[in-house]
Length: 301
Image 1: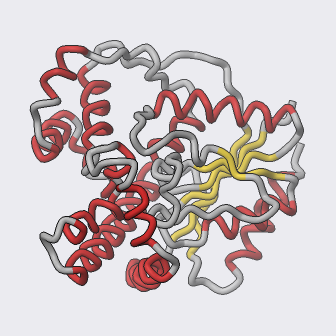
Image 2: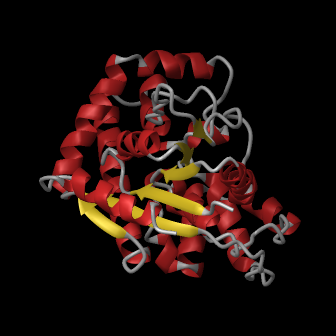
């Protein structure tokens, strides 16, 4: 059975989707998003959701912004999609910058399904602020805490679940006999270069109607809903509540995206230093080098 998986990872604004689409067209592939923000319907502009023409992309628009969705659920749906693509002899191309979601698919032996919600912890956590949850998780797992992006670190639901998993004594590996042939390409770039790209992208999102998207979302959902916890929306919340001026909120949004880029860069370099091939997108001919690498791997029996 066809068992190859191509991964295109890296920090935000490195052009992952554009590259993935080009590779999908050449190698009979379909995209599988590993972005934790793009699972929400209606959160399109704020999450930078790209839906390429004629190239299918899976694992976006899975739930409404007021619904909860765990990494375990994402893993279950994602592995099903990957298996379906393999059965059709198509190449799954995993693309995104949410390291935890990516890891749940390429390391399926790591299983959180057995860890059930802890009712006592859930009752306690409801009374705690996000800042308190951050302190608790940092105390329990300082290494992974330092790798969280802005959306994760400010998301009450994700922090609650991370702490729950960490506290559980049942968190252990299982053996489900997955045997993927993986090529992992991770895009990198100097931070100053990424910051400039991010700032331009923030402005583009404003130009194509981000404010109208937020207004329409607020007609159906509240700021406390899981989807509305995403950084882009939270950064604009003070403006919509008349607590801060627009420019301050926009600058906070840019800084939050900058912070995400730093954390994502650190995460992929540290976690996959020996498992991925890194390509600097500012280097000449980097795409040619990637296509050559993919060709050799794809055509190898």
